[in-house]
Each structure stands twice: as C-alpha cells, then as structure tokens.
Length: 191
Image 1 (cartoon, one colour):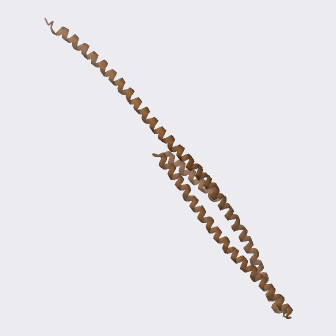
Image 2 (cartoon, helix red, strand yellow):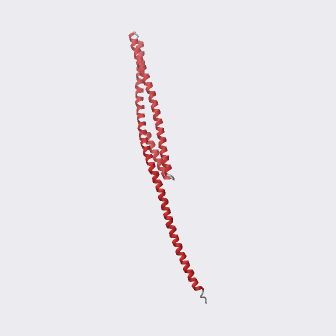
C-alpha cells in the first residue's frame, strides 16, 4: 500500500498545483490521467519483477528440497553400509539444506505477500483511472460550457455597455442640436 499512498499524494499535490495554474483544464486533466497511467505501468513492472523473483525463489526451493532428500538418502545408505562418519556428514549437509529450505519458504511467503499487495494496488489504481477517465469527459463538457457561458456573458455586457454608450451619445447629440438651435435663434438678432 506504500507505493499507492505515495502515488496518491503525488498526484493530489500535482493536481492542486496544476489546477491553481491551469490555463487549459482539459490539458491538465489529460496530464493527470497520463501520470496515473505512467504510475500504473511502473507498478505493473514492479509486480512483474516480484513475480520473477518469486519464480527464482521457487526454483531454489525445489533444488534445496531435492538436495536435502538426496543427503538424507546418502545418510541412510551410509548407515546401511556401516559408515557412521559418512552418515553424520550427510546428515549435516541435509540439515544445511533443510535450513535453506526454511529460509527460502519465508522468502517465498514475503514475495507472495508483495505480489498480492502490488496486485491490489494495480486494481485500485485501475479503478481510479477508469473513474478519472469517466470524469474527464464530464469535466471537459463542463469546461466547454463554462467557456461558452463566459463568452456569452461578456458579449451581453459588451452589448449592454455599447447600447448605454450609444444612448448617451444620442442624448449628447440631441443637446448639441438644441444648443445649436439656440445659437441660431440669437444669431440673426444682433444689435
């Protein structure tokens, strides 16, 4: 779970940083999904490595069990031939391989646990990735809608402002005409 927690924290911090600076939310969402996909590839590669290690441990375990059995057979043969010195030596070798078997079995359990954890992390990240892809479409549509709405609101404000300015200009022109008429009335009557 350590890898997934770390990945979640990294993605979360990157999301927050990107959204704060986002100029193109669609691009940011695509980048976040790409990060999740890259992380998924890394976790799968780690899982594959752990599986290869488990297979190697399995082969070593089988070899060690076989060697322990061989040394036990040699010890029995030595006893049947009356060679206790060789039997003791064979039992000593059998013990060494039996200890190796125990050690390899513990390693096998650890490798199995690690693989199971990787697989759980992979499933969890795949679920989150699928959810992110589904949300991506919704977020993109919301972003497009917000852009259109903003553009429309700006056009409305612009039109309202232009209309108000046009009315103000017309009112000013009417006053100019009235002043011009007033000047004309007095123009012809000079003493």
